[in-house]
Image (cartoon, rainbow, N blue to C red; front, side, top):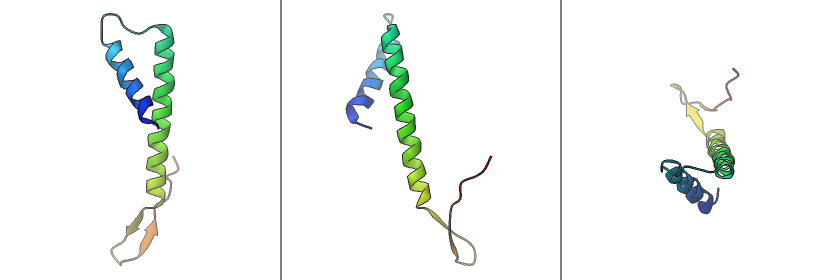
Length: 69
């Protein structure tokens, strides 16, 4: 995610805490930016975990598997 989008999320968060608050359009923008940020974080974590291996007590390496809920 680009830094300017993260900066915009922070700017909107600060504005939401003021007495002025956010307009309807700004609330929508904040929601979209937050969703994009969450997708980026989850995608990054998923990529990192897909390259992670666990070493058991016998020294055998095995990849992590996705948990089925």
